[in-house]
Image (cartoon, rainbow, N blue to C red; front, side, top):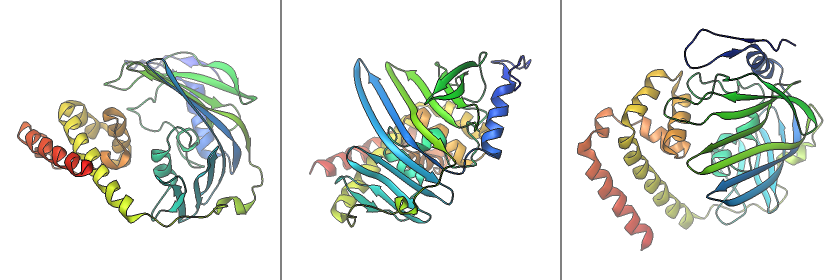
Length: 299
């Protein structure tokens, strides 16, 4: 395996041949199924929050993610169930692994493994280029390579990403910013193994959606959206830069979500707005709408 580090001649970083090799291996070969466990540790101002989960993944949009409290996300193709606010699985029309991961981001393997056959770290403007030589390591008993990735524009700290030597799958990420640090890693995994198809159907009773909760949820979504608009006004130059340089709308939405610390849904709503709505004229309108939603939520 070629681990030669070659200077790219491009400003802001270096190009590591092994990095491209492993990413290509993941997209071309990767894994057909995966069964394992992960752990997530978040530290904010000295306060530590830890989570663990087990998972099973197969092609065709089949997922099972379970934590100590039960199933978090179960999916079989178009049929999707995600744990709701009442602590039980609920059917979600149009649900996906990415939407489940957005809701339960600290215990869902999608952020690490993606869908089988994905390109990992595909956006050239968001944690895409290695900044130093790779370091050989071991994660979940598997040989792996740890890379330090240059931060994108608008961020200061690099990201540590560790890729499996045999499949190219991402086994660990570590990031820190603004007094917070987050580690997510696979603690046990088997790739390309048989999985009982019954794992991709709920094993516990499924609750019908709580429509009163959905009404409250819609108000909460509105709250997040208007707060996101105000954050977008504060970061208009970075927002424009993302739109200009992103490969496609989904990549742009992911970058906006990370920049503004909003959900993927809010990021897409921001990108759907006409540019003139991010002028100073609209700031007061957004503030008024945000205040109104807060009043409704408090009533």
